Image 1: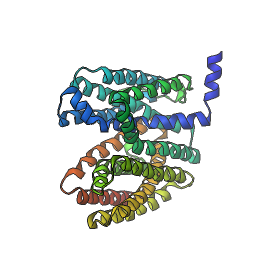
Image 2: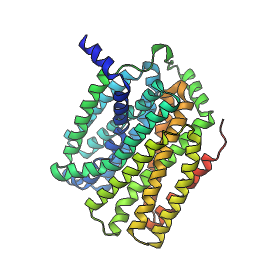
Image 3: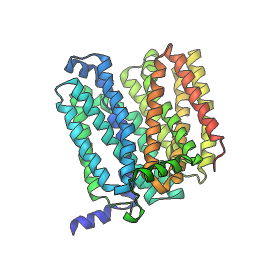
Image 4: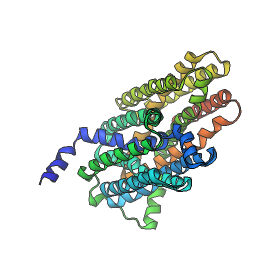
Length: 390
């Protein structure tokens, strides 16, 4: 009796907004929180940098594949049970990261940690599509975008503070605690996908559903634009610490700048959800990204100083946040009939494109390479926003 009353009470807009927002942040936190611990992990396992970095690679692969896995099964079995399954795997894998006696077992646990965290990310978008449509859906994705954008930037900052104070294993202890709390939310959450709306996992039917989805030009275009803005965020995370260090900023000052830029993402993600026509938002925001990326490239190549660089980067993040909200809303509206599969491919594209783009900044002069990559990504986004879709 008490349990059912609790479930009814939490199944409201405020609970869903915060619950789905935190679920969407699992990816950035699992992937980025421990980055500054690489030297400690290398020393603990007596390993080398390239092997330790594999733990980030396997986690990213897990995040991409996990969205395909959990997104697909959530269309068949509902959202709640796959979400609880993902939490169970996540808690076991996170505990495995803490107690792993070897670097290779640690790397394996990171794969399963990413795989399971992807369940939270992909199902959060699916639940939103189940419960909302139109402006309500845009508003929900705006909130999710705000939390996700802020967590992407602040995760390494928060992780660095925890590592400095308590050591690298404390990061995974914190991730375990977050997982326990979110699991409790999953237990009391009501199912959002009625049994009548679920689909079979028959391979031929599943293939037909995927084929119908990729034939929707609006969905494909929005997913590709999301991949591009995720690549912009990944490229900035990869290049920013080195660039700011060259300007003479300390690690603490760099963390503050990350926090300031996260404000830009939060503001624009939320503001974009207030507009009724997401295609217009995408078009104007894509133009803004091109302008901001060119200003950023000029600041980097001409080396005119930190504040010019930071001003252009802040402006770029303002437009990136708007494109994140717009692309997510358009893609999930287009793929509403199979929200789990639509969310799965959408999220996987984001991580795969971002994962491919981020190493490019290490080729040659990081100032020049970053400039080229930023401009190229934003121009591609603009080209897609001008594409006519049904």
